[in-house]
Image 1 (cartoon, rainbow, N blue to C red):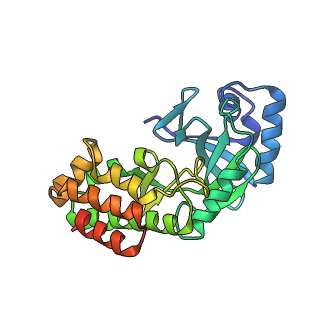
Image 2: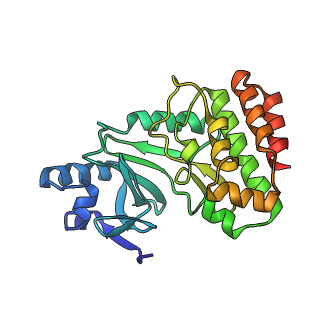
Length: 254
């Protein structure tokens, strides 16, 4: 991984920083407008670090809509800063901010901090993607605790009427911080109008299929009856209640 690079706001006009700030192509007016937005958010510097890459610089993440970096705030805090891509097909981050705030209301997701048209600030989750964390923590009790927490968060999202939308393909949407606390992140495609599928989708990712996470789970927790899991998920989809959810927990984790 490349070494972190901390760049003050006044130096973000230089390349390659400007082209990341206004990805994929920087125009002077766009750069200046975004710098003004960052000042209103009390950002004084951006730190380029992480396993992702944009313009050959390390970043925390790079998606279709935005690029995530570390923001240094005037009070000394470090936060996650999502920067809107100019080619991302989104006009602003207001919808995503609203979805994150709704998730926060049931204790899910990194804490929302602030939003402007082109930037979304939230709690910085300092940790690893779930698959990487599981590979390094093969204690049965650790697995059970983290997976239980993830499933409970998905239950709360279902109960709140908020569908994340990306949890069946969750490698980049599940993080575990350095204290072992899991987080569901990235609510850009979340919806309060779509059919709810948080629990069922995350179970597909965690327990079903031939991906690395199901293999790790069965290696540590022991092989499970997939047909039974699928049947319980079908019952949960038909009648979403705590009874079916508890049966799912018992079957998958214990």
